Image (cartoon, rainbow, N blue to C red; front, side):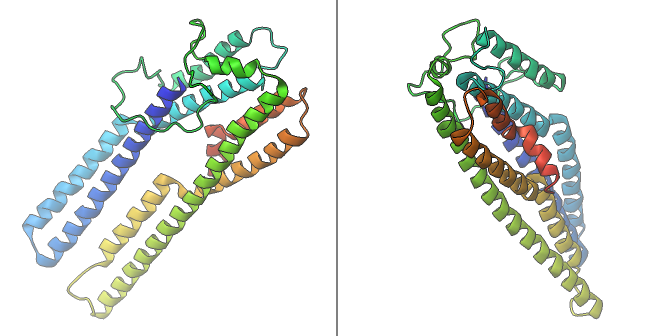
Length: 309
Protein backbone atom coordinates (compact mmCIF):
# COMPACT_ATOMS: atom_id res chain seq x y z
CA UNK A 1 0.00 0.00 0.00
CA UNK A 2 2.85 2.40 0.76
CA UNK A 3 4.58 1.78 -2.54
CA UNK A 4 1.44 2.13 -4.67
CA UNK A 5 0.30 5.31 -2.91
CA UNK A 6 3.80 6.75 -3.04
CA UNK A 7 3.91 6.20 -6.82
CA UNK A 8 0.44 7.69 -7.32
CA UNK A 9 1.37 10.69 -5.19
CA UNK A 10 4.46 11.36 -7.31
CA UNK A 11 2.42 10.99 -10.51
CA UNK A 12 -0.26 13.40 -9.31
CA UNK A 13 2.33 15.86 -8.04
CA UNK A 14 4.05 15.92 -11.42
CA UNK A 15 0.68 16.35 -13.14
CA UNK A 16 -0.29 19.26 -10.87
CA UNK A 17 2.99 21.10 -11.44
CA UNK A 18 2.96 20.49 -15.21
CA UNK A 19 -0.61 21.78 -15.46
CA UNK A 20 0.19 24.95 -13.51
CA UNK A 21 3.35 25.52 -15.52
CA UNK A 22 1.39 25.13 -18.76
CA UNK A 23 -1.26 27.59 -17.63
CA UNK A 24 1.31 30.21 -16.61
CA UNK A 25 3.31 29.73 -19.81
CA UNK A 26 0.19 30.17 -21.96
CA UNK A 27 -0.73 33.32 -20.08
CA UNK A 28 2.77 34.76 -20.50
CA UNK A 29 3.03 33.92 -24.21
CA UNK A 30 -0.42 35.40 -24.78
CA UNK A 31 0.81 38.62 -23.18
CA UNK A 32 3.86 38.60 -25.46
CA UNK A 33 1.62 38.33 -28.54
CA UNK A 34 -0.66 41.07 -27.19
CA UNK A 35 2.34 43.37 -26.75
CA UNK A 36 3.59 42.64 -30.27
CA UNK A 37 0.09 43.10 -31.70
CA UNK A 38 -0.17 46.51 -30.03
CA UNK A 39 3.20 47.60 -31.39
CA UNK A 40 2.77 46.33 -34.96
CA UNK A 41 -1.02 46.85 -35.09
CA UNK A 42 -1.41 43.25 -36.31
CA UNK A 43 -4.80 41.58 -36.38
CA UNK A 44 -3.15 38.16 -36.72
CA UNK A 45 -1.12 38.62 -33.56
CA UNK A 46 -4.22 39.89 -31.79
CA UNK A 47 -6.11 36.75 -32.81
CA UNK A 48 -3.24 34.53 -31.61
CA UNK A 49 -3.19 36.38 -28.31
CA UNK A 50 -6.94 35.90 -27.88
CA UNK A 51 -6.61 32.21 -28.73
CA UNK A 52 -3.90 31.71 -26.11
CA UNK A 53 -5.93 33.56 -23.48
CA UNK A 54 -8.82 31.22 -24.29
CA UNK A 55 -6.55 28.19 -23.95
CA UNK A 56 -5.45 29.52 -20.56
CA UNK A 57 -9.06 29.55 -19.40
CA UNK A 58 -9.64 26.03 -20.72
CA UNK A 59 -6.49 24.81 -18.97
CA UNK A 60 -7.72 26.28 -15.70
CA UNK A 61 -11.04 24.45 -16.05
CA UNK A 62 -9.24 21.16 -16.76
CA UNK A 63 -7.03 21.66 -13.71
CA UNK A 64 -10.07 22.17 -11.52
CA UNK A 65 -11.79 19.07 -12.87
CA UNK A 66 -8.73 16.82 -12.58
CA UNK A 67 -8.06 17.83 -8.93
CA UNK A 68 -4.50 16.54 -9.27
CA UNK A 69 -3.27 18.49 -6.25
CA UNK A 70 -6.00 17.12 -3.99
CA UNK A 71 -5.34 13.55 -5.14
CA UNK A 72 -1.59 14.06 -4.75
CA UNK A 73 -2.00 15.18 -1.13
CA UNK A 74 -4.45 12.38 -0.33
CA UNK A 75 -2.13 9.67 -1.70
CA UNK A 76 0.87 11.24 0.04
CA UNK A 77 -0.99 11.27 3.36
CA UNK A 78 -2.00 7.62 2.84
CA UNK A 79 1.55 6.56 1.98
CA UNK A 80 3.12 8.34 4.94
CA UNK A 81 0.41 7.04 7.30
CA UNK A 82 1.09 3.46 6.27
CA UNK A 83 4.82 3.93 6.63
CA UNK A 84 4.54 5.57 10.05
CA UNK A 85 2.27 2.83 11.38
CA UNK A 86 4.63 0.18 9.98
CA UNK A 87 7.61 1.68 11.78
CA UNK A 88 5.68 1.95 15.03
CA UNK A 89 4.58 -1.68 14.66
CA UNK A 90 8.15 -2.85 14.03
CA UNK A 91 9.84 -1.07 16.92
CA UNK A 92 6.99 -1.35 19.49
CA UNK A 93 6.21 2.35 19.25
CA UNK A 94 2.96 4.22 19.89
CA UNK A 95 0.01 1.89 20.49
CA UNK A 96 2.07 -1.16 19.41
CA UNK A 97 3.94 -1.49 22.70
CA UNK A 98 5.31 -4.81 23.93
CA UNK A 99 2.29 -5.53 26.13
CA UNK A 100 -0.36 -5.24 23.39
CA UNK A 101 -2.08 -8.64 23.05
CA UNK A 102 -2.76 -8.57 19.29
CA UNK A 103 -0.37 -6.25 17.49
CA UNK A 104 -1.42 -7.50 14.04
CA UNK A 105 -5.09 -6.87 14.68
CA UNK A 106 -4.34 -3.46 16.16
CA UNK A 107 -2.27 -2.56 13.09
CA UNK A 108 -5.17 -3.42 10.80
CA UNK A 109 -7.59 -1.45 12.97
CA UNK A 110 -5.34 1.62 13.18
CA UNK A 111 -4.71 1.58 9.44
CA UNK A 112 -8.41 1.38 8.64
CA UNK A 113 -9.22 4.24 11.01
CA UNK A 114 -6.62 6.50 9.43
CA UNK A 115 -7.67 5.67 5.88
CA UNK A 116 -11.37 6.11 6.62
CA UNK A 117 -10.95 9.87 6.94
CA UNK A 118 -9.11 9.98 3.61
CA UNK A 119 -11.91 8.04 1.91
CA UNK A 120 -14.34 10.78 2.95
CA UNK A 121 -12.48 13.27 0.76
CA UNK A 122 -12.36 10.97 -2.25
CA UNK A 123 -9.25 8.87 -1.70
CA UNK A 124 -9.37 5.35 -3.11
CA UNK A 125 -6.86 2.57 -3.00
CA UNK A 126 -4.84 2.70 -6.26
CA UNK A 127 -5.82 -0.87 -7.15
CA UNK A 128 -9.51 -0.08 -6.88
CA UNK A 129 -9.65 3.54 -8.01
CA UNK A 130 -11.05 4.61 -11.37
CA UNK A 131 -8.50 4.38 -14.13
CA UNK A 132 -4.91 3.36 -13.74
CA UNK A 133 -1.80 5.19 -12.76
CA UNK A 134 0.45 6.36 -15.61
CA UNK A 135 2.95 3.73 -16.61
CA UNK A 136 6.29 4.96 -15.34
CA UNK A 137 9.65 3.42 -14.74
CA UNK A 138 10.05 2.30 -11.13
CA UNK A 139 11.04 5.32 -9.12
CA UNK A 140 13.34 5.19 -6.11
CA UNK A 141 11.23 4.89 -2.98
CA UNK A 142 12.16 7.32 -0.23
CA UNK A 143 12.62 5.81 3.21
CA UNK A 144 11.70 2.23 2.39
CA UNK A 145 11.00 -0.01 5.33
CA UNK A 146 14.00 -1.80 6.76
CA UNK A 147 14.30 -5.11 4.95
CA UNK A 148 17.75 -6.77 4.89
CA UNK A 149 16.66 -9.59 2.60
CA UNK A 150 14.33 -7.66 0.30
CA UNK A 151 11.34 -9.57 1.67
CA UNK A 152 8.50 -7.14 1.15
CA UNK A 153 5.81 -9.76 0.84
CA UNK A 154 3.41 -10.61 3.65
CA UNK A 155 3.35 -14.06 5.23
CA UNK A 156 -0.24 -13.80 6.54
CA UNK A 157 -3.07 -13.17 4.05
CA UNK A 158 -5.22 -11.79 6.88
CA UNK A 159 -2.75 -8.91 7.29
CA UNK A 160 -1.40 -8.16 3.79
CA UNK A 161 0.30 -4.92 4.84
CA UNK A 162 2.50 -6.62 7.46
CA UNK A 163 5.62 -7.96 5.76
CA UNK A 164 8.01 -10.63 6.93
CA UNK A 165 10.66 -8.01 7.54
CA UNK A 166 8.31 -6.05 9.81
CA UNK A 167 7.69 -9.15 11.90
CA UNK A 168 11.40 -9.94 11.99
CA UNK A 169 12.22 -6.50 13.39
CA UNK A 170 9.38 -6.63 15.91
CA UNK A 171 10.72 -9.92 17.29
CA UNK A 172 14.17 -8.47 17.98
CA UNK A 173 15.35 -7.24 21.42
CA UNK A 174 14.77 -3.64 22.45
CA UNK A 175 18.35 -2.48 21.88
CA UNK A 176 18.38 -3.87 18.32
CA UNK A 177 15.02 -2.32 17.49
CA UNK A 178 16.22 0.96 18.92
CA UNK A 179 19.37 0.96 16.78
CA UNK A 180 17.39 0.09 13.65
CA UNK A 181 14.91 2.88 14.27
CA UNK A 182 17.56 5.50 14.97
CA UNK A 183 19.68 4.53 11.96
CA UNK A 184 17.15 3.62 9.28
CA UNK A 185 14.31 5.93 10.20
CA UNK A 186 15.42 8.97 12.21
CA UNK A 187 18.84 9.55 10.65
CA UNK A 188 17.44 8.93 7.19
CA UNK A 189 14.71 11.51 7.76
CA UNK A 190 17.19 13.99 9.23
CA UNK A 191 19.15 13.86 5.99
CA UNK A 192 16.04 14.12 3.85
CA UNK A 193 14.52 17.11 5.65
CA UNK A 194 17.89 18.86 5.79
CA UNK A 195 18.41 18.42 2.06
CA UNK A 196 14.90 19.57 1.20
CA UNK A 197 15.23 22.65 3.43
CA UNK A 198 18.45 23.71 1.66
CA UNK A 199 16.95 23.04 -1.78
CA UNK A 200 13.78 25.00 -1.00
CA UNK A 201 15.81 27.90 0.44
CA UNK A 202 17.95 28.14 -2.70
CA UNK A 203 14.94 27.94 -5.02
CA UNK A 204 13.11 30.59 -3.00
CA UNK A 205 16.11 32.93 -3.18
CA UNK A 206 16.46 32.40 -6.94
CA UNK A 207 12.80 33.00 -7.78
CA UNK A 208 12.53 35.94 -5.39
CA UNK A 209 15.55 37.60 -7.01
CA UNK A 210 14.15 36.96 -10.49
CA UNK A 211 10.72 38.44 -9.69
CA UNK A 212 12.34 41.46 -8.01
CA UNK A 213 14.50 42.04 -11.09
CA UNK A 214 11.51 41.77 -13.44
CA UNK A 215 9.51 44.17 -11.24
CA UNK A 216 12.36 46.72 -11.33
CA UNK A 217 12.57 46.35 -15.10
CA UNK A 218 8.81 46.92 -15.37
CA UNK A 219 9.21 50.07 -13.28
CA UNK A 220 12.07 51.27 -15.46
CA UNK A 221 10.09 50.57 -18.65
CA UNK A 222 7.15 52.56 -17.31
CA UNK A 223 9.40 55.48 -16.41
CA UNK A 224 11.17 55.42 -19.78
CA UNK A 225 7.85 55.33 -21.63
CA UNK A 226 6.49 58.25 -19.63
CA UNK A 227 9.59 60.30 -20.49
CA UNK A 228 9.43 59.36 -24.16
CA UNK A 229 12.58 57.22 -24.24
CA UNK A 230 10.60 54.08 -25.21
CA UNK A 231 7.65 55.71 -26.87
CA UNK A 232 7.31 52.95 -29.46
CA UNK A 233 7.11 50.04 -27.04
CA UNK A 234 5.01 49.34 -23.96
CA UNK A 235 7.10 46.74 -22.16
CA UNK A 236 5.94 47.50 -18.64
CA UNK A 237 2.87 45.28 -18.99
CA UNK A 238 4.87 42.35 -20.36
CA UNK A 239 7.52 42.63 -17.65
CA UNK A 240 4.88 42.96 -14.95
CA UNK A 241 3.15 39.83 -16.28
CA UNK A 242 6.49 38.01 -16.21
CA UNK A 243 7.05 39.06 -12.60
CA UNK A 244 3.52 37.94 -11.70
CA UNK A 245 4.22 34.57 -13.34
CA UNK A 246 7.32 34.17 -11.19
CA UNK A 247 5.39 35.03 -8.05
CA UNK A 248 2.64 32.56 -8.97
CA UNK A 249 5.16 29.77 -9.56
CA UNK A 250 6.92 30.55 -6.28
CA UNK A 251 3.60 30.32 -4.46
CA UNK A 252 2.73 27.08 -6.27
CA UNK A 253 5.97 25.40 -5.24
CA UNK A 254 5.77 26.93 -1.73
CA UNK A 255 9.55 27.24 -1.47
CA UNK A 256 9.52 29.79 1.36
CA UNK A 257 7.05 28.02 3.71
CA UNK A 258 8.47 24.56 2.99
CA UNK A 259 12.00 25.71 3.73
CA UNK A 260 10.77 27.03 7.06
CA UNK A 261 8.76 23.89 7.84
CA UNK A 262 11.48 21.41 6.85
CA UNK A 263 14.03 23.29 8.95
CA UNK A 264 11.78 23.13 12.01
CA UNK A 265 11.03 19.43 11.47
CA UNK A 266 14.74 18.68 11.20
CA UNK A 267 15.44 20.58 14.42
CA UNK A 268 12.69 18.66 16.18
CA UNK A 269 14.00 15.35 14.86
CA UNK A 270 17.52 16.17 16.02
CA UNK A 271 16.19 16.81 19.52
CA UNK A 272 14.20 13.58 19.44
CA UNK A 273 17.19 11.62 18.15
CA UNK A 274 19.32 12.76 21.07
CA UNK A 275 16.58 11.86 23.54
CA UNK A 276 15.91 8.46 21.97
CA UNK A 277 19.60 7.59 21.92
CA UNK A 278 20.48 8.68 25.45
CA UNK A 279 17.64 9.10 27.91
CA UNK A 280 14.56 7.19 26.74
CA UNK A 281 13.98 3.95 28.62
CA UNK A 282 12.10 0.95 27.27
CA UNK A 283 9.04 1.94 29.32
CA UNK A 284 8.91 5.40 27.72
CA UNK A 285 9.93 4.15 24.29
CA UNK A 286 6.41 3.77 22.75
CA UNK A 287 5.45 7.35 23.63
CA UNK A 288 8.78 8.74 22.40
CA UNK A 289 8.46 6.93 19.07
CA UNK A 290 4.91 8.21 18.66
CA UNK A 291 6.11 11.78 19.25
CA UNK A 292 8.90 11.31 16.71
CA UNK A 293 6.55 9.92 14.08
CA UNK A 294 4.18 12.85 14.61
CA UNK A 295 6.95 15.23 13.56
CA UNK A 296 7.24 13.49 10.18
CA UNK A 297 3.56 13.41 9.23
CA UNK A 298 2.63 15.52 6.17
CA UNK A 299 -0.11 17.21 8.19
CA UNK A 300 2.47 18.47 10.69
CA UNK A 301 4.67 19.84 7.89
CA UNK A 302 1.68 21.60 6.32
CA UNK A 303 0.76 23.11 9.68
CA UNK A 304 4.28 24.48 10.12
CA UNK A 305 4.33 25.75 6.53
CA UNK A 306 1.34 27.99 7.26
CA UNK A 307 3.54 30.03 9.59
CA UNK A 308 6.46 30.14 7.16
CA UNK A 309 4.65 31.80 4.29
